Image (tube, rainbow, N blue to C red):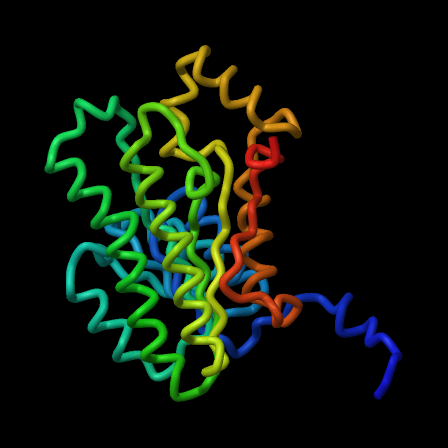
Amino acid sequence: MNDEVDAKRVTAKVDLEGQTALVTGAGKGLGRASALTLAEAGAHVIGVARTQSDLESLQSHHPDRIEGWAEDVLEDRLYARIEALERLDIAVTSAGGNKPEPLIEVTPETLDWMIGLNLKAVFRTGQSAARVMLPRQSGSIINISSQMGHVGAPGRTVYCATKHGVEGLTKAMGVELAPSGIRVNSVAATFADTPMTRPMFENTEFRATVLNNIAIGHLASIEDIAAAVLYLASPGAAMLTGTSLRVDGGWTAW
């Protein structure tokens, strides 16, 4: 038994050269930040988004490392395309959405849309990614979840339900795929300044409530979330699976 610490392994810069990563929701917000960070670390990144102009903007930062797929996570075509890949090392499920409203006002259409986007699409992306990763007996699947996957909140019953589902899915996938060398973890993010959340913060009362619940006292940056994604994709997280990395500024620690 060797008691010496391999400090170089611990402190080495993350190098994803030669690896292929797929990021859904890569056109904006946390998905975009994750895609750019993985590309900066050397990975070949497949960014998935519905809007071609968003993909072109994303690719402009690393034209040699970022490939854009104009696809919808609610459509079957995307999953056939993923499963046709020869190699996939990292999959980040960042596509998602929210429509905050009181419980009694939620329509069946809203319920179906949010479950489809926030939970079913995460399941299907992870399932397709796993099918590609299994032959190599390695891979990292990272689900972008939320602190709302650990708590409840008024006006967010469906969102909380879907994110709690993502957290349960992450645990179950992590356990099932661990013997095959595939790690599955989530990033439970607090509120960050993104295109999805920005309109919410126009309500000064809501913004004050959010900041009062974040022990650190400020919103997360998109870089905070991307750093967590990079860590979970890296060799440094080799012993993490089925885990929720709470990048929430202490929200769930109260």
